[in-house]
Length: 232
Image 1 (cartoon, rainbow, N blue to C red):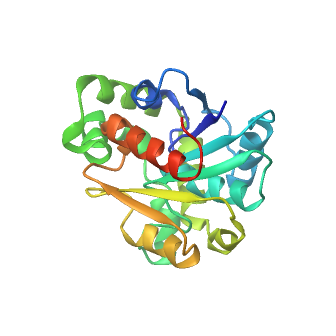
Image 2: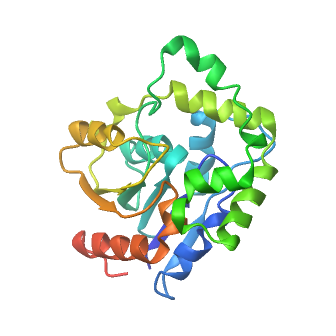
């Protein structure tokens, strides 16, 4: 049996994947990773946390949303046993925010935890937001300690794993959101330049694609899996 391993966005909760998982066939096994909401961990430490939990008794796909893209790229480049494909969702290999470097320290101090839920939902979920998805987003954001938010923002601004892309040998799908207000289009174009075999599919949705368009995203995963030889 193939396992779907899901890596969350910056909140790290993994609690917002339930609609996407429900859109997959009932016999598909899913494993949702979660990052500690109260421990300051950099990308290398989060990568180690995920690596230790990866399946060891069968094939698996990595699906990485937003903040977790660099983790999936680094893991795939190291060729873990059983990995048969990667899906990158609205994510990046290098800092996606086009700001002068001298502004990065100020940007990392942005109080994400104080952003009103309705504004966060408008940016991340767009017109697809419902009362349920807004509540899930609000709860996930509230659990993360301010120091952890600051650390993760700082890590995202500093990360660059483009050099690892050439070491990836498994198929990779990039799901791009047409109305992404967080990660710009050039993030997927940069990955494509370093990974010529990358398959890019653009869906009509916002940054949180798996939450806003779960059925459409699941359908693309199933197509991708069949293309690489796994019928989920």
